[in-house]
Structure formats: C-alpha cells, structure tokens
Image 1: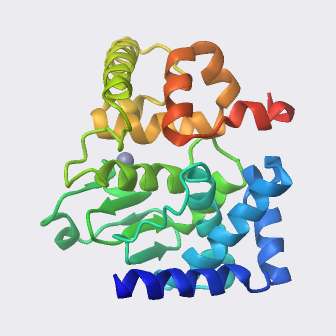
Image 2: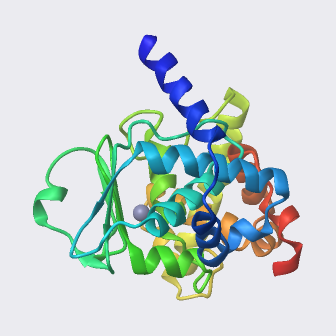
Amino acid sequence: MIFSWLRERRRRSLRSGPFPEPWREALEQNVRDYRDLGQDEQATVRRYVQVFAAEKHWEGCGGLTITDEVRVTIAAQVGILVLGLGDQYFDHVLSILIYPAAYVAPGAATSSGAGVAEADSARLGEAWYRGPVVLSWTDVLAGGRRRTHGNVVYHEFAHQLDMLNGRNVDGTPPLETAQQDRRWLEVTDEEFRRLTHECAHGRHTLIDCYGATNRAEFFAVITETFLTRPHAMQELHPELYAILSEVYRQDPARRSTARR
Ligand SMILES: [Zn+2]
C-alpha cells in the first residue's frame, strides 16, 4: 500500500518533468508510429516514456552501450502498444537487455521459468515471466522506423501482456467480460486455424507465418500486424481487427489514414 503510494507519487513527478529535446528527436526519428498519433496521444506516450525509461533496469549486452536514444526508442514503442490501457508499466518486467543485433542466446536463459524465446537460434527477442525482456537493437530500429512490417517491441511486450493473467503464455491477454472471452476464443480459434492452413500450403498471408507456430506466437504476431498494418488487417481480417481493437482499446486504422 505504502509502496504503491510512493510509486505513484514518483511516477507523477517523473511525468511532470520536462521532456528533453534529444528524446523528442529520438521519437521523431526512430518511432514512425509516434508521428501518426494525435497531439494528446503523443503527450500520453511522452509521459509513458518518462516513467518507463526511468523505472526499468537497462542493460547493454554484447558491447552495446545504453543511451537515452535506446531507452526512449524502446519505451515509446511499448507506450504505443499500451496507449489505451492506462498505466500499464509492466511492473513484473524489471530489466531490459539489449544486444546490438540478432544474437545467439546463452543456453542457461532457456532452462528455467515460464516464458517465450523466439524459435530461431539467432533470436530477435525473448520475454520471460518476471525475467528480462531481451531485444536486438538493430531489430528495434528496423521496426520502429518501419523498414519492416515486423516490430520486435510490440511482439515481446504482447507476450508480456499475455503473461499478466498468469504464468501461462497461452495467447490470451487479460479480457474484461465473459462475453469478450467467448468472442476472443471464437475469432482467434478460427483465424489461427486459417493461418495454419494457409501457411501449410505455402500461401501468401498478411499475418506472418511465424504466428502459426502456436497460440502464444499467434497473439504476438497479430499484435504486430494490428499496429503496423491496420488497414490491411481491417480489410482482410475484420473480426480479428475488431476484437484486437477492443482488447487494446485503440483504433490504429483510424489514426493512420496516411499510410494505406
Ligand atoms: Zn514470440
């Protein structure tokens, strides 16, 4: 109780501080989705960055030096993911480890705890329950600058959302009502089945076939598609778009009319 009161007081103070100009430049240059936001949404993301950047333990690995640019670029993308979710600072994520590029993970990291390590041995990221989120800076930048349709920050923090309702990484984020729960299962069961089928037949899909790996990866990958290709998703997977819109309480297609 006291702890959460102190934490809230500290967060208020962080949010009310000035937003340094170099941070603003990092947002403009590295986080393309930030530019599509309305002014109020941008202000929300900036306040989120002030808290998230300060609260997490940031650790550079493989020779990477943590700079404000690294912290701000990652924090802002997390802030966009949870834009509609209030004060979701992922309190169970204490550390963020960043490698310069896709890295080969040390075996020890995979041996304990519930979590998700991406399938390739040269990985783009990992998410562990009460453990660190591991990211590759090269991929953080590529996604942030929208040089690819993938976004490793959205992906790994979608796994973290998935873990909020228990240790199971089962592809179901926290849902609000029994009715939403039912619709979520109906829509995602059907869409997962469809993706698995299309990928097995080598068809071109909007949703990356990595999402056909299992339900946890499906949720992380549809989250990426929802935020990076909202119009295409709305057109090709309208029910999936609608339920994601409800779950994330945001409508990225509406704000990004310029990027059709
Ligand atoms: Zn994943």
